[in-house]
Image: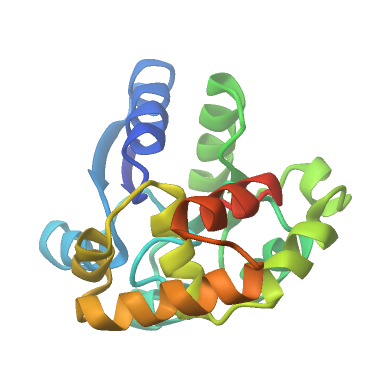
Amino acid sequence: MRILLADDHGMVRETISAYLTSEGRAAVVAVSDYFEAMKALEQKGTFDLVLLDFSMPGMNGLQGLTDALAKYPEQPIAIVSGTAHNKVAQEALDAGAIGFLPKTMGAKSLVNAARFMIAGESFVPPSVMAGGEADEETAFAKQFSQREKEVLTGLCKGQSNKEIARDLDLQEVTIKLHVRTLCKKLNAKNRTQAALIAKEAGFE
């Protein structure tokens, strides 16, 4: 199996890569954002499977999936997410994704899912489509614009404004404005409290 994995969380990227390499004996190319993923597809050709993190920099929700499939229509692409929303999973499949994987999946389940998709089948865990807590998480996320969600993800990872600006290719002053807006929307005194509120709400 030749797999391209794009995820901006270093630990998640390493864990999933290790699962696929040790359990699935896959050759994994791991990158940290959407732009690097597109560069890898351009330079290294078609993979057996591409796994794209739903909320990483450059992804812009499912727009990144749509753009990638338009450019590489023969490439099997699945979405990976830390907060498994049944609505997003269905939208991803409707947009052409071959699957939707929660980051909480165990090693063997993940490898089996990858093999299933490489064989040409669509895969979404039944627990995701059943719904569960997804509506509440989605309601929390709905109050933010896509850019605000990207900045909030950076806050949850403990990044500085400068680091978030670099990842999103924006000016630092723009990030400061977004942080101020986020604190206002969350009724938080500072960035740390904003991140805590987001994490408690299940935001990734």
